[in-house]
Image (tube, rainbow, N blue to C red; front, side, top):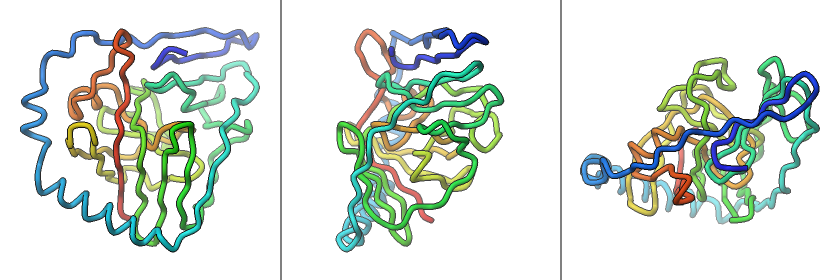
Length: 232
């Protein structure tokens, strides 16, 4: 699918495709963003936590996760696709989250501490006694104005974490570093999704305006390599 696509299924389980309206003029903001966000203190803090988690993870088990499988379409089902064109969130006709085995995903058991590797680009989620850290793609999906997994309306500051392995409390503050330009900023957990090849999904305006990472179909952009973490 094209990045940002939203697919819904009608009463006959026929697919209806809605395309995200991309911005193709991204020439507005780069210098100001870098001045505001390339904060040396934030960079040093992020680097210190990264090194601590890396050291703590040396004694942890490593798990390689299987690729997700889409459930069978049902009337009223909606599938959201991320900035790489991959299915990242599925809800049923009642708005309930659906996992890749087509079971309701309201309940969740935290995974044990370890290093979880997944996706075609080997994204990494490291869970220690103190931190949850992601390394890999930060992508986006068009969730603005919809209700997230916690029943709250999604805003520009919100993000989605990996449903099966990373579900912090609503509004958990997550630090994100764009490794391409060293911009560091915060997002707040308000949703979950499959995230088949990403460690975090953020909103498209947040990606463009605060991380200086264009969302543009013509240039095939809508993701950046990043690191994320929050304290348990």
